[in-house]
Each structure stands twice: as C-alpha cells, then as structure tokens.
Image (cartoon, rainbow, N blue to C red):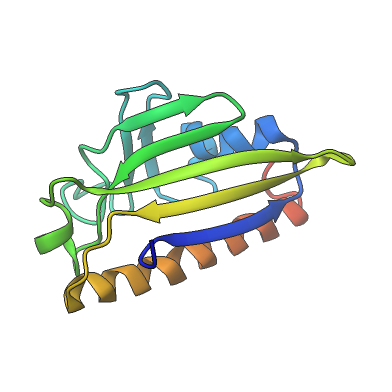
Length: 154
C-alpha cells in the first residue's frame, strides 16, 4: 500500500464535466496530452500521445479501460515515458490508474477527484518512476485546476 500514488483534488466543475475531462478526446487534449484516442467503455482504448508523430514512445499505446461508470469512476492501464519504458511498458501487469469522482453536496459545481496510481514495484528504477509520476500527476491536475479556474476549459 505504501507505494500507491494517491492524489485528491477539488475541481471547479460539475461531476459530468470532471468525468468528461478524463474520457473525451478533445478535453483530454486540452489539458493532459497532445493527442487522445480514448474509447470510453470497458476494454476500450485509453491511448494518449505526447508525441503524435512517434506514437510508440511517450504514449500509453495499447492501454485499455478496465472499469468505467459514468460520473463515478474510471480505471485504465498506464505506461511510462521513454526514460522508464524499458521496464514499465512491458510489465505484467502494467501500472494502473483509478479515478473516483464525487460531487460536493453543498455545491454542484465542485467535484473532488481521487486519483490512485498502483502497480509500482520496489526496486530503485521503479521507485524513480513512481516519484516521477507522483510529481507529474500533481502538476497535471494543478494545471487542470488552473484552466478550469480561468475558464480555459468547460
């Protein structure tokens, strides 16, 4: 349990918008990646490309959605960038991301997301990758929060 990344973030949007920010290709391309090819159903692709001209590196090519319930949760496989692909991208199982969405009872335009990133092994290379992703997820979610705050995204 100590290796799980857990990040909790409050977003200034309703729960449907928050869910769509992780499942709609155009919205993902507005805050997380250059190109998204996501098919929001169990077994559907969860492929994000940070270099769309070279889809084999710095991407989640081959990753699949493992669980989904609209406006409640989303889970999917995850791969690492070029620095970690030698051990992360062929691991069995891959690392796994789970996101739970909850709406603030007092304000329907506030949603809390709980992001869990699991599957980290204990050797030093994996620990470096885990530390990288803890920072990367925090930075990405802070960027998303700022874009919502400044109405750059819906």
